[in-house]
Image: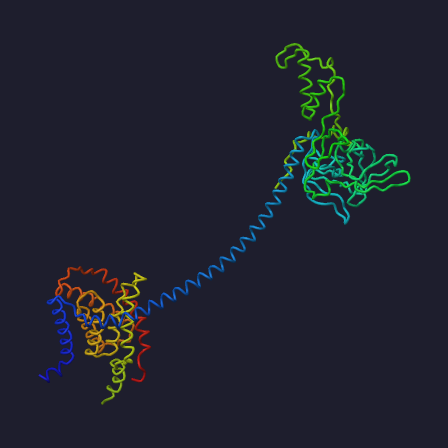
Length: 376
Length: 178
């Protein structure tokens, strides 16, 4: 037996192992009972390790996730900072755009309500030279802008066009030394010439000492220079220097004291009225007063004065009136024409062209309609 | 001893030389393998196909080159596995005893350092293990479980793929100079 076991030792051990386990199995199956002790041993041996692994895992995972989260938070923070910066820039940009839009709206309202025909132009550059008080605008002869035309804003005069090119024009600002405009004071109605001096102020010289000018009194254009329509605000008297015979008044050009971005070029000016002594000048949207009364026909005059400011509108109203007076129905009366000579002439606003206007009008192409002042 | 024996002996010695491990590794590695099987599929279900206790049984049995030792290693690992399973004790024990025994027997005939052979043996013993487990479950316990041959083949292949690098790592635990 011993010899057999030593010869077949391996097989014997295998058989012993297998049979032993088979018996263990058979016992469990037969008694329907578990060998609890063995299980308890192994489970007790293995589960602490599993707990250790789980603890390590959860702590490691927690640490890693916290670290990753913090890392993400840091990155998120950087991203948010960048986004915040971008939003600030965007906000500033939008505020600027809003201001531009508001200015453009004011210009549009002014353009719509002004009797003068204007073209909105954006300033695209300045003239060369250190003390250049000239600016380039993006409207030229193609838009009907010609040399000698006035550049204005609702706040007041800006300057005049000194050169006109197909796509741009050079505007001399009112503060340029060679600039001059005929002005009148609001209260004392003193006439004078407002000249640029190369500084921020305009100077109205040759004013008689006999008449009084108050500080803060507004000056308006008279239209006598045939550049600026009558009644455009220039600015208030800032400093009055008395001389022996004449006095000199420094006027602050209000339109130039704000950042210039757009101007209106007056392509066809209509004279307005100079506000009365007690009428406060508006620094916002400037509405030209109705055209002056001629006195012959009160009704017509009143209606005309309330009529829209353009010549075309006034002409339409005039012919409507004539038609009513002569029982002439436009478009239906055959063989008879309206006698325009019989009717008293309706008060017609005085259209003023710049200095070269009559000559230029013959060569000038039809002016394009005013375009919105803001272009992107 | 003639000239032929002089040439043959070193090769034969190298091929049949048993490897020894510190007892701590022999206990810890199978334990870690069982823990891996118990613990990891909780988080990575795809790893549940890995039969690491079987692979460690095969490895230690191959390296020991002693069928008795292989059988004992297999029986131990199998019983621990049984203790942590829902089956009666002995099912995994018997199967792994057979695997350990035959692995050690095979290692006496072949160069088990060869990666290709390790791959084939791992593949073969996985199929053997699954088949005998299914057989014993049906025969001894009356379980009505099916033997999915194609799935077993795929899992055998995947386990063999894992076995080759795993055995290389476990080779580092061998004691030097023996």
